[in-house]
Image (cartoon, helix red, strand yellow):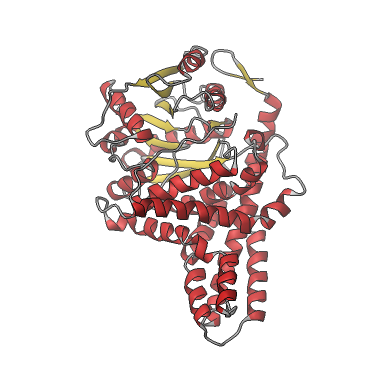
Length: 482
């Protein structure tokens, strides 16, 4: 068994060893992209009609809109493959002996979120101490939360864990609410305790997201590299968010979330890994130098419900070229139901739309996010089923672009879309207990892509409507599978 620093048995050692071996050999593949793009181009070329119609102009605009994201993603995946190839020649990393790591885990503290929190905290206790002699795990809760007694008992299992309770009376100067308010409280506490230093790193994690042996080694490798780089070191980094099959209570949402680790090794790898996180960040496996976090904080105002993306844009405007990406994984859980899946996407869209058009941020920092959000919320109108239904009503089913030169771009977009679900499923299966995809899963994930695209589109469009109607922001916390 893998044990924590306090001798708590947590994870089977054989499973851990197999996972380390699999992940050491992993690198993203491109066969699914190449095959799909070639087939899409051949099929669309065979059906191409040179006549110009209203529907042809409409689909030319709608279906060409995502091309920039697709090209960015393909570039990021190629860079990730090259980065992984270089890593295969590295020697083993050394523990981070000179830097302190503070793991911050905000939780709403409900009883239905506690089992996932426990799983996550125990993973930090099991895998991080070997690499970080100066380690502390802060569970960030609200005063009077439902699971307070259980969380206190969890903290008592290890001397590495402490509970930080946000008083009900606490208010930020800007009136920030929800998770950002709690993060700002912890940020102010670290400043008061003298931890806003260059050699203190804060690892932000969600309460349903754990770590593994690869996570700890990659974080230590990154931190040691920044110490060696001195004044030229990076200040922020992010790794991959993956979903082991064992953490899923709903196989449908687990398949739908195949897209998320693929996005991490594609768009996030090229943008955050390129030094400037213009596409935003996610709140899991977000590593930030405490001295830099102290200059930004989390007080983004009462409308902020995507605080991680807001932080990314502020960071991008102040610290250009100082972010990075690493190949360590965090281990989360997909939503328990499709209803929760839709709620999650709705909240993201709601917050990102407001952020993309937030004039308090420099327009140059928001430009890429504005494009990405626009492409995302246009999803319902880009869906092939919706387009064909509208075409049938109008008596115009011509979906050929106005020029055949558009067809290669559409083929790239289609190839990239299939690649994201195909490669993301491989990643999620590789971090699961048996380490491989079941025979029917690749078939199912590709066959269900139109359904998943419709769900993503519905959630994002609902978020857009809420934002446009000026509905008061709500930070919806879905149930966290254990």
